[in-house]
Length: 101
Image (cartoon, rainbow, N blue to C red; front, side):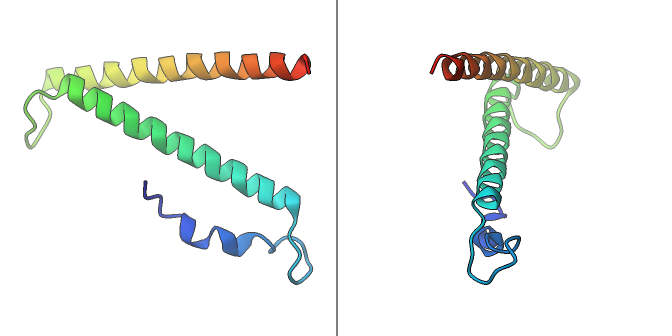
């Protein structure tokens, strides 16, 4: 998967620490979290595009007809709703498991 932002990712690790060569663990964790969020968003978009294209586009051409446009819109809405439902359930379960530790 090509992202376009990975080439300068490592160059910012020590930039907020003020000392030469020192790594700020908090900054590193924030950058890792951002990278994970971006990767998740890219995966969501790629999967949604693949699924909805296969479902809605029978014969690719230069433009989408009205029924294809409606199908794509509905498919993407349903996919996003499903993704959000699963994400909320997963986060809720993680929080319950962390509370029980």
